[in-house]
Length: 158
Image (cartoon, rainbow, N blue to C red):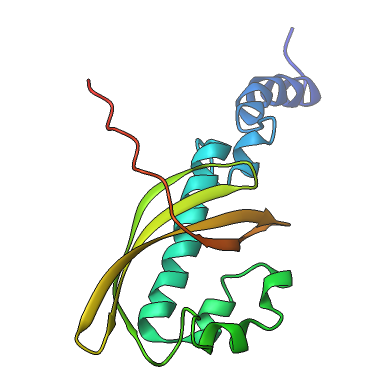
């Protein structure tokens, strides 16, 4: 007794099917952006990227690049506020350094603490700013900015 061609095909399909199913997941990995990446890790990474892009725009005085990091509702009127006397892109000062010091979940989204060094004439000052980053559809955006920030969490000891 031999195995017919259709019987051999069925055996081959049944042998391959479990291997093919190993690649199928619950979708959690795809939602997190890439396989093996947890949603919390993605939120922190995307938030850090958005705020870093905004800080880089501040240093470069690139108002359009800064506006592109904001959530849509915040983009309206951004340019006049950002270049005004107290705006992040005002002409009378220069942002010489900007560092992200902490990223953590908050009540309205991810909270990204920064330290900004500003120079105006011969005066130099450092200020803490706290950015709130949220998910808007499939993308992440800066939803808010306020004075202050969080102290970095202590490093875990082994």
